Image (cartoon, rainbow, N blue to C red):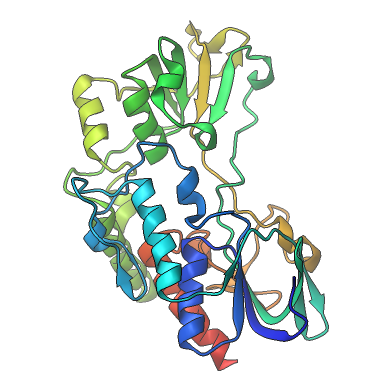
Length: 350
């Protein structure tokens, strides 16, 4: 049941960002609760496809206070390993996570915020929204999409390549997910890769840790008025071992974006056409912010203006883990901790 007393903070979401917030709230001596809609620990990591690997070795991946243990035989940890780490993390620091609890709405309640859930209502001086993006997959309204008679799936639906054995598959998207999924589906199916611009591959010696270090220097340079191109000048796609193997097989050749889908396939702007059995949309996600609708702080694009993690229209609201607009690199394991530390320091100062 919900609590009748007033809390210092309610954290909505028990994934990596929510746990990082919980760590610093506990250190600050705050009275708080973490509400998570999942039945089990692990956040979105428990829903990723079977072969997903992190971009960084375990020794360079951590939430605050505890480095991720290494995984035997896996230089780049699997999603299951990350789930186990997050599970152990919340137990290690005795974080007050309640699950499964679905947050329906956050509303103003005098000087407090009321968090209405399927398990009652909590009242708090601050609400930290850390719901991520996994439950809001984005599929563009591409011409002909509704006419295509084959299977259409998004990254969020993908589990393993054998689902597409013997099929003709169009993979759409130019990021890491598209490259990773294409790399393994191409071993089971005839694949075509379509991107809006030519994909840019990072140097082979650049992994997630190096990216974070480069991006940190870039952010510092911008604050100091220096024009450091940073990560943007390097590329977009990390050359993990499976992606390198796919490159060596010659399957990482991207076609321009299709002009439209047809009932049996797709057509390109130059008039070329091809038939496909399935389309895999690796086209990203949107932040999950519906629960904040009653506060009236979202703009016409559904975003919320922030100063760091603090809501500009309502400073009682904090957003963490949605990307750089809610704290530098806050959608990563190590970045979530750094953003959470600054966020909790600001909360406790108030």
